Image (cartoon, rainbow, N blue to C red; front, side):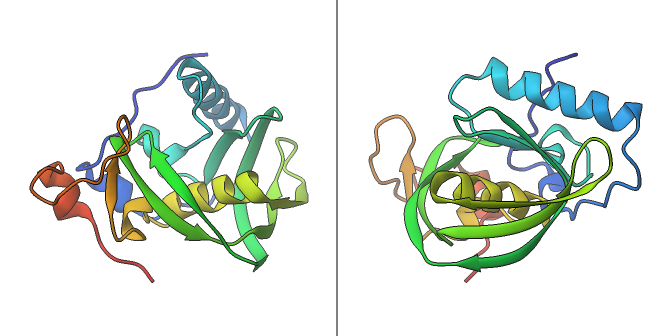
Length: 174
């Protein structure tokens, strides 16, 4: 296993659409292990998509407090309700924003055996799933926010105080 370097905002790969994994093989398993080690090295981080380590594959690892979850080729089947809360991203250090997400999601994904499984989630886990699945489509949490905040202080960032790359890379999604 190896900790991977996180791709930062400004790298065009973050806006690419990830490709489906055709089969779970030794390489896929190594990427998943490396991704797990990467989020474990940065305590308090909830999830990571493969695009964030420069690999445009539909792979996600998350630990939202109840242990590691791996998603391979996840597909959203259903969502409902609404929650509004703070989000941040390993690829955009130092910045946070308030994002509206569905309260409940139901997804279909592969496990390591290549079997299709269904996962239902609500609350924080549902938020994490939606955040990471957005990465697979080249969408970042900053695309949803009206205001950005310092992740350290919680103070609102004025456009002139925000990273210029951040302001150039942001695109509004509604």
